[in-house]
Length: 225
Ligand code: DC
Image (cartoon, rainbow, N blue to C red; front, side):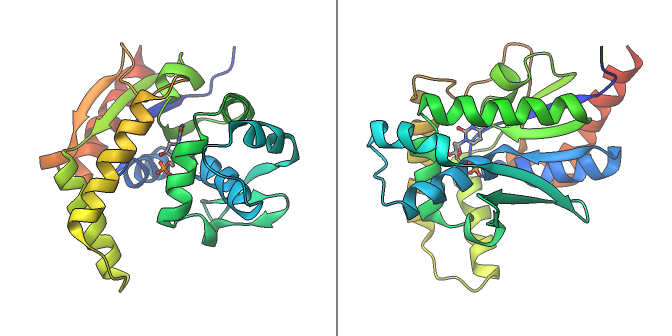
């Protein structure tokens, strides 16, 4: 038996999972694993190969040719796609949409879930995604389902893009968020849902610090057991 601790944080796009998970990882000295970034790297590859989001056969055929690896530089996760650092290329709406579409593919999931499970065997992790508590780490020490009202999530995303000087429209962002939630919650394999033993946290009216403190409290409780 390993003494590694695993904290699983699942939830819809824009609920604040990565911000919170990073903060907790830092406070606890664990590794932060952003599984969405792995699906995004896979999606980038598919886009670059000119494969359509609906072309399940070509997506499945492409998977063996994709090598996604994760390293850490100064505590930051670096995602490598076939030996290329793609951190700067995967945060676009186009890649996010393709990641959501291609993540319904069985071969894509099998490959990335194996990689995620291998990381959690080696280290104590805070892992965020859509299926961590239900599928990747069903025995995680702490499971959280972090959500927030879709309008609140859209406003957060809008402000983030505005701060980066990017032109954007709040209504379009909210519509994209609602579409993505639907797609992630209604796919056949490992859809986004709250694990039975996950604690539901709605961050709509909570600060980042309040959410982080709530989860750290659960971790401390779990370690004392
Ligand atoms: O968290 P994100 O926006 O970076 O994730 C991009 C997409 O990847 C998301 O819409 C669904 C997919 N995903 C998944 O299916 N399972 C995960 N564990 C993480 C992400």
